[in-house]
Image (tube, rainbow, N blue to C red):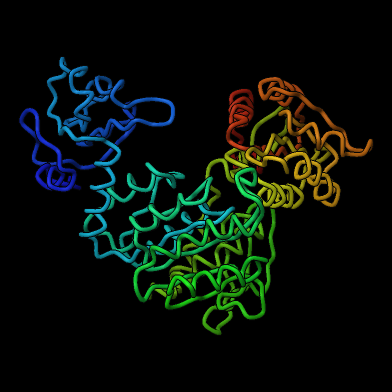
Length: 477
């Protein structure tokens, strides 16, 4: 297995000092003591809830050949005999290693931000660029102050493409991250009411997302959503930041990478895309118009970076929904089956509407029902009651007659739904999980969605635990 970093390179980049006889190098970097891979160094960063130094012994027990620790924590690690690199601050050292990774790389770098669709677009880029070279991208939604440097430090020196997701909850958070990544091309998927409690309005959110322009390499490119109401504002911000080339995607007639037509079913989509003036019919292995729209941005990035376009378009057929973002499970129940749509990773008003549309496109079997199991959208601040109430409109328009809710904020939606909608409401996620497991029936389609803090993954897990996976072979036998 080839080395990601030699220990000599790591010490030079981090400014660390060695303890013990260091190995020649490492094959990877981990911050999770439970999942250390062979040859991976453990960086004992201090997170929001736990300090990695408390798990250093577990990392060693699980095979870490090297650990990176802070000077201040060294006395507490006295019993460990594993080789160490000692630094002033582990997260800061990881950031310095990330800068060294970017400095040595010859890869074409793409950065993605936006209120909705960052992770899905990142995964699309991984898919569509793969036929044209070695792609390095984050394994999950590693888009914050530790996730971005970790992803960058993990980038192999010989990568052809690097794909980075950059998120934020507050103004000023994107700037240091994008200046670390230094993308050649940046995509803003859309501007929507995410984290609205930390901002005055959508324009403030757009201004925070526009920080991504500050790190684009000289001569670089931005791809913006021409359908979004904040487009003119973002275009102006890109120009003010000196971005050399600005392209657009969407359904707008003037979009450079245009979604001309869309046909979708419960499992996939067919789109007609106008790219560089040519119309192509493209099959996408994931459902939803919002997926198709972001595919235009991903294909636009491919085109601008000189990737193999026929192979990129073909690769979209193999795309599958990301876990917690539209992933589907067919589960056996009684003599039939039910469909679970897992949207449990996160939620804001825009992604809620997209998920409701996805549920509306699904067809229950026999006497089955379309069921929306929804939890609070967090970080909405003073706007919370209003944005939860406003979900009633999309649910009614989609014909969703069974709405199962949990969370204090969802009480506002409960009170806004008319009597012909069958509503079940609980304050606690655990109580809703019990209700869902007891109440689903053969033929049902259940869509589960909430902000991550509500823990709706427990509802998904409860369904998966209680009802066996139902294969396509069994379904059609």
